[in-house]
Structure formats: structure tokens, C-alpha cells
Image (cartoon, rainbow, N blue to C red):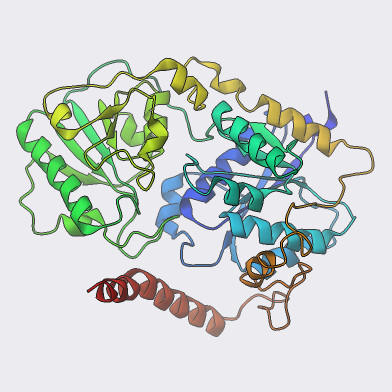
Length: 439
């Protein structure tokens, strides 16, 4: 057995939203051997989607330490000369953030000792496949949540002449829970909302009205609107039209409720999961809970529900009102990493084995080598790095936020005020300006 399977491991996760923190922290837990003693340190990248305390609590993952950082502060923390360096680093970021960190870490570490760097995707990959993948290239492991994704990832890398050996098939780390055994009392229908799909008031209002109508037609059922965030909070995607605001002033039936909380706990009492294209559908399918992917607004790339083509889960509200329950296609489900056959416990074995070999590699790991460099992408890469206050060589730019000391009380107050003003501008002011521009 490799030494890395039993020794004490230090793991760091850098995340830029509540959803990515959930993915990164749970992935870190599944990538480490059960026999190892693990210390998990969380770093939250400061920005518009930095999770709130409530969001972190809802995720339900406990870290040994958790701190908010800028990109430069994180890089300096990673470059500190210490005997207790991290063994594994999980980058749970948007593609541009991953690319910036890969170059920043390469500059910080050089050819010295470094951890195994892991990255991947939070859920379904239905847009910007090539762009997102190439921005993640350079990590030691690029995790694919299914066999379907692993095949696509390798094809993209090989198609541009990039090393595809980093692609590693796993599964979504947040699958789990008890299998569905039959109807509850009362029978419970859950609509899992998404922050940015659909993206306009008319369509979101339509879906809300149909959900309310379903509750009225079936007074014996409990109908739940599962919300992602409270007004003013941000998730991975901006939610400009929260459903709870659209519901204000409506005559809601007694069996219709708005709920927050951990999706797994909501699924514990779900008899029918309805969504446009949420990853919650995969969680439900994993537990064999009847799942419907709505066709009311069409099957379109912009909605993301095209990803479920072949799943057998498509249905309209008219069909659901009439009692229809979709039956999933088992072959499709298996290819999507939804391992309802009981093999989920072994879904991360290959990744764990690869990490163990990398940790035990004689002489340590070579420097990080992203596909994009100042030579291969001189018109693209510098802009990505600059957004994180990094120069073309990955080193911090002059004037980048200092990280040599903790912020004082006054600086902390100013930071909180500025961050609140920024989020207010993004969620309140910017949508108004966009709508005015459309007049």
C-alpha cells in the first residue's frame, strides 16, 4: 500500500461560490483514503459570489479552517516555505480562475516541491466545453463526472494536441442518500429552481404559475419550491429574478411551500423531482426518485435541458398534472455517472490511486504545464491573468492586494461595505440598466 494511503494528509480547497465549495470540499473528502488522517483547509475567493455563513452551513461540509482571500493572498499562502505544505490542492473555480491559479502557482512553486493539483466541474457540462476544458488544462487531474464527460474531455484535449492523461473519470461527489422506496404521505412534488435558467421574468413567472396550478389541482399533495439562495445572496450564477420575489402577492394554496436547506434532506421526502435542467435531477435519479425534466419552454441549449436527451425524463406540466411519471433510460443514466446500481462507493477509486502514485513519485512532481502560455495564446491568456492581478508570467502585478498581514478592523469594515455595495450593484442596479437598454 502506498505511504500516501495511510499517512496524515493536508488538503486545501479554493472555491469561488457556495456550489463550488460544496463540490470542492466533498471531492476532497472522496479523493483521500479512508485510512488517512486528513486536515481540510478552505479558501474562499473574494468576489460577487463569495458564500455567506448561511450558505456555507447549508452545504454541510466542515473544514478545519476557512478563510476569505484574494487571488494574490492565496498564491502567497501557497508559496510560504513550510514543512507542513499541502499534499492535495482542489481548485473549485470557474475556468478562468483555474487557469490564473495554475499560472500563479507555477510561478510561485517553480520546480520545487508542490501538491497534487485537482480540478473539474460542479455538474453537467452543457456549454463552453472546449473553452472551459482548455482553461482547466495543466492540473494533474481534471475530473470528469461521468464516462460520457471523460470521453468528451479526452477528445477535446487530443484534438488540440494537448496531453489528455489528466482526465480522470469519477462521479458527482454529492450523490448519496437512501434509495427511493415508495410514496410518502403526503405525496410530495419538488421543483428545483436554478439561478439563471430560465433567464427572463416571463418564463420564470410561467413556471411558478404552473407549479402553483399543480398544487391547486392536487390538494392532497405537498408541492415545494426548492430555492437556492435568499435575496441578496449569490450563487455560482447570478439570480436576477428570485422566485420568492415573483411569488410575493400571489394567492398561494395551503399545500404550496417555499423551502431552503440541503437538497439531500429535501429529496428524503420527495416523490417527484421537477426541474428545467438542474443537477438536482442527477441526485434524484441516483436515488431512483421519479424525475421530470420540463419541456414546456422547449428543449434548448440555452436552457441546458438538451443534456437530458435520451434520458427518458422529458415531460411537460400538462403531462405531470395528468399523473405521468417519467421512466429513466438505464443506459443513459449509467453513462452520466449516476451509479444507482450500488457501485458509487468505488467511483473515486481510480482518482485515489492516481493521486497516491503522484504523491509517492520519486523526486516530486514536475512544474505545472498549462496548455495556454504567453506563446500559444498571447491574445487571450494575459487578460485572464490580469483579472486576478497577475502578469503574463503568473507573478503578482505591482499594486496587487497585499497579503503580508491580516486586515485591521477598519480595513475589514471597508471591505464588507465595498463587497456589499458591489453585490447590490450586480444584483439590483445592473439588471435595471440592462432592462432599460432593451426598451
